[in-house]
Figure (cartoon, rainbow, N blue to C red):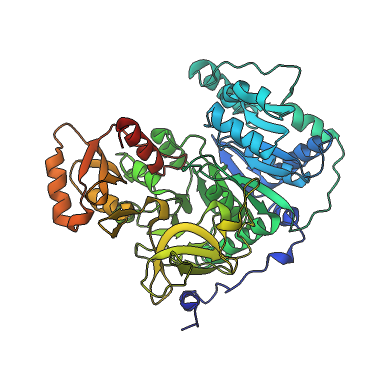
Length: 565
């Protein structure tokens, strides 16, 4: 067994123990290598329209040249607010090629959330799809934005795009009215950026791996989101770590092109990391602009083979609940990667039964460019763990006093590696690291003898019942097996007798589901102090943009409903 790092003994023979991001001078070197190697390969497919790596190379150069012509100061922040459309990756890569820093924004943000990110980042330029321009209109006067680039969904889809734009605007009416022609903000249409940029000179900038690349904002589930500063080294390292980890399977896929389903939003760190992985190996991204449209999603999947399918548990479950999902051809599927939130044993078992491809779970966070731990990619069985640290990542588990814990002891997970951020943009980050430089994740885990980590819960979500630690993830996983429970979430609420008590929110299948039946099921399957003392039926649960339940929202709602607490 490797001393202090037993996980290294679990690595497949062709997975390196470490990676070296310093073999690249900067992030643009990595991107340009991909463009040179795979120029004629299809890079993205969206609504039947294909773009090659060469197409994306040219479009990103045009974006970069146009940005450089705007005279932005060195190190400027450029915001990107788009769903998964063909222009997303060329725009993001163009921002980086121009020598600027990209801050991706969730296009579903409200005006309040958008204002916070724009002001905190200090962005001066924003690329936005017009479906979401109304939110920008509400707050743009309160920000430092000087230039707005407006894009339509179909802007890079040729003649097909004209039809797409007409349907979105006039048939489905998905573009709320907005007004952004204020003289204080110069507005340019995205096609004009590409057209002008192709005629402008592009000056390759001198960059290094220590410079900032991405300003990625955290989910903000406990308050205002924070901007994690991701350097070019962080991003390059995550790309190489992911590539190395997938190698045992991807090296065995004997296909001309490998297709990766890209339903996760590209502005989310998980999908961003996957885009890096895909480009490194010349994958084709099957872009899904709206995965919530399950019938449309399944129709997209029916049109071409897919080899790699990354998603979060709620998305996998949503697809499995569609009657015609089982009719798809899964013969090409080689990797099903679960991340972003805890995967459940129930969903993993159903997925394997329907697709024949095991679900492999991993763990990552914004602050590590979504690279952290992962199960060995060749595993055929779902083991309920988040796997082992990937190459060049070190993990320790500590108690409340910062002391390191041993095997099978629950404590806070802390990690270190070339992919891990140095801190946040406008927040004191000193308390986010241990004295020896490990980032404190806020996740409660335990490690077994082989180096596999089990995610128990978020530190802030842990419930203390009469001195016993109770983990909501465990209770939710059990209660999902209860007949009539479609979805559920657990929080701790103040209790005079126990300190805290367990409250269970349930989305019931129908009106026949009773609280007494649920309590009885809990008593049969959980130790007494873990059983919910309070049960509330709800129509749905508040969730993040990738489907993670926002327990903080539930806690806030409980306090609103019970102001005396």
